[in-house]
Length: 382
Image: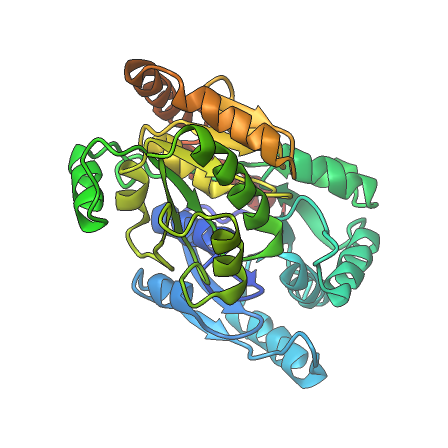
């Protein structure tokens, strides 16, 4: 099939549209994809959410199927099948496991080329059992449903191949970052400290993640206690869904460690670039990740990072920060102390190098081009 100058009709099918790293990467891709070449639409398997509204503001149609993961509905699957058929879609790009399964099956039945999207590196004990079932089923289907499998991280690709996914169909395309949106901002440093009623010279260590066992706030808090013993003037700024003083589990952990006056819990923020740029260091304590966006975002703001060795974290940070083992408070504290003990000029130098690394390896326009190349190759072979 030779599309010539005709637009390629591209349908993205995603599990849901609440705020998360995977959902936001889809939004960023749609922000910069060549709309002269690609006619895009989005289908959410479940419901709508804040990312759905952001996508609509790009004048891209968003449909919601309304399927509940706990109660799969064959009628809704048939509706998805009909939508794809009626839209005369050229390529389907699915995003996350349930979308890979349902969207992939609907596309395959319609004889539409399907590209799967792998956004996770591990299945933790906290994973829902039905998600594990979907992953196992997808491993078996990977031989014949997707024409390509795009993984957001090398670690995720390796793990899914061990789970039985077809190794010949993988292509790793990392997440990308908008360097005009995430950038150093000296004003942010002053304004956030003023907002928190802190001295302008106060060292701020940031942690940006929703409240979830995988993000391992427990290890972060225990490491912060060790830091506080030696550096009582350091303050920790946390934000994300569920990160507030109404979270009894989180606040209990903070209080029993004697850190109530050391932690600032900001909840979910819509101004993450502002928060990131105000930090002296970002810490990631995750037990498992594929490609943690927070590292790239902080680095783009010129902020060096200390991170656990989860997923592709080490690949992202490179020589511009410190990598420590997962679930080890002492190691995380040691990494933070190593960063905090650097002269201010040296931390700034690491921050400059971190932004340069993002520019060279994870610049959003170049990442979008890699997706476009996959789609163009599929059409050229059709």
